[in-house]
Image 1: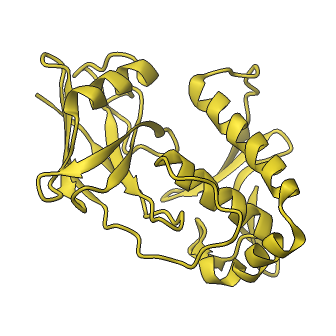
Image 2 (image 1 turned 180 degrees about the vertical axis):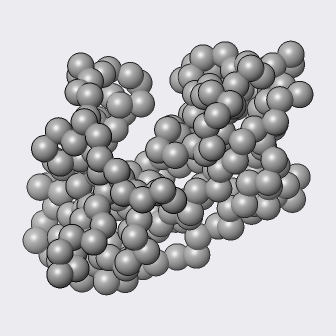
Length: 228
């Protein structure tokens, strides 16, 4: 549950006491949260596995190694959903940076890194071609850099945006002077393995984000895919 305090609470987002709090153009809302039965999807299993791995990893660090993460807290400040700048705790920073690095195939850091430049990430046109089994993603990327590809399952035509539905389904390299994300057939096959076969009857959102060598993440760039 994320809360912003004023003289009284002025804004809230997240789950609390069996309810979900959110806000949008029409104002704040609250509804009862439906409790799922311990889902065991591949995505959720990976998230749990990483959490366990890095919780244990933090315990195994030396005191001097943990101190580097405490000292780095202010260097990796970020904005939350309300636009306020926050700093993660040393432990959470260790988990966040190493989770991001692991997603793109980099090793675990025991000592906090210095901030590094985050590769640019602008998705302009994701295209799904069911007939050829390809997902082509156009944009402004850094050639030769790995990008995390996210998407949503098929949603109704009345859905405005991806919301919090997006999940990782692939990681591939930018090619052609950074104009495309490569391996279009692989992108499609991995999408199908996570979400099932898409159809032009509904909407699908696809996008990307980049991760720096220090484990910092760019903003997500996601939009509705075009079917061809």
